[in-house]
Length: 432
Image (cartoon, rainbow, N blue to C red):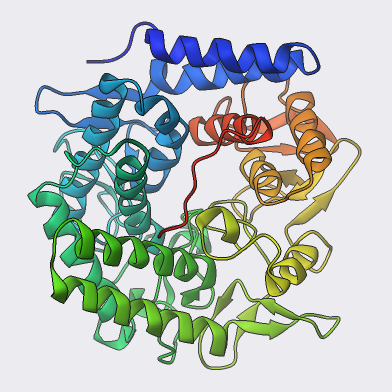
């Protein structure tokens, strides 16, 4: 079942947000209404088995990461609306069904139709659209299940698939602390080096650090160094969620112990290997490290990113190392920071040079306490929407009418979340 009209509770919330925006920021209201409705009307498929499938946008597949981000702002409505709550719970159920099929996959088909990248040299199935292993693909469904519970008290998402999936996640992350023991490999016949792993599909060499390895970034581009720091940060937060759930709701001491031990090991690895000097000799977080002395100072637009660390619940917005990192990322020291006639911000190797991403701009706004800076970014986003009232993947800082993807559901919802944040409507990602 797909939505043919906006549910009454969603319309009511959109009207509320429009009223808040209307006096001083009427264009925010236009874009909010367009983006908030777009996700429901174009991407949602609900099934009789109680699960929800969510298209990523203009690709007929569901990404574990994107689907969570697409639904996150609806959590504020789920408090009062049982049907929206059930829709989100249904997404979690489908996410964990997919994780149990293959915890190394990042994107899945709506049914076992064999669509997607079936010629990749890895263990594909008819259900799998793509099998690029990314830590965040496992973090996001746990995050959504936890936030749904904390926002609404709903526990229907915690079924057998969830419990089995949590065990698979813990096992996989422990295996990937020593990638030499990993069963995973991935190669693709392509001209684009970011779409495949080197060294016979195992990726570049790494040493053990306590962190857990990732083949790809949340951009679906290959990691240059194997330990993706923002994704490891996200993993520590999610492991905190798991420890809390299994000590308060499920009383499983073994899972609590596993989660706490793994969390501590990853945190130690981040502190020991991922804090590096920038050009000004200030301590900042590296984007990737290999445990062998290699690291990169940069950020990418996709979340988890270093910029997003407070948004993910990893640290406070005023954390000194985070602030030094943030300053560095918003400078030319970050090779993907672009500044032009109409905009400045963070782009990605995934899109052309001088293209900044609305997702990254929204995260920049969501991770500052400066209200005027949030306002500046929101104004920039609506001014650079290419006349569509929707957010895109990326746009040219010198010509916003040049953009990638006519509409991008994840980016739409990040914009909406920033508008909500400006008016002090937030979903807290920190665990107890």
